[in-house]
Length: 178
Image (tube, rainbow, N blue to C red; front, side, top):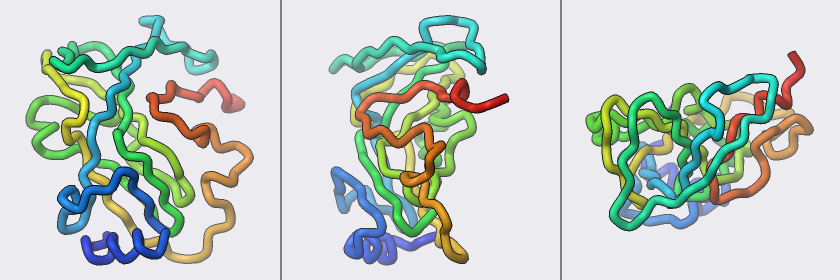
């Protein structure tokens, strides 16, 4: 079950959902619009290794925007910090973003109950496109959870993305044992 706008507001009031900053105008019928933060990152190496810590280089989006190029993975971040204590959040791209040829996530659209942070975006583009800080890029959709939860994400010992940040976070795949 996807939460409606009224239900999202009720859950915010209860503290089960936190969105900062919150703007009522960004609340849709069953989603909340999120915006591109000012920080981007790209990997320093063109060849990535899943067993190694691949370092990134950070930069800010200038006021006049920045042109993203195909064949490069950009890591972005949402302007909004969110917490989800009783629902499963999904981040999907907005249709207007997709119609510009911008994908905001490669595979990581689902959050976990207990996720408390900004969202790192895995941005790729179909053709060169200029983007801007603060532009709407996605929407959060909240699903109800069936059953009790044993371990919330922010309490798991092996949770890799719990350090609060305003910058995009590179892959932590290298922390896995394989």
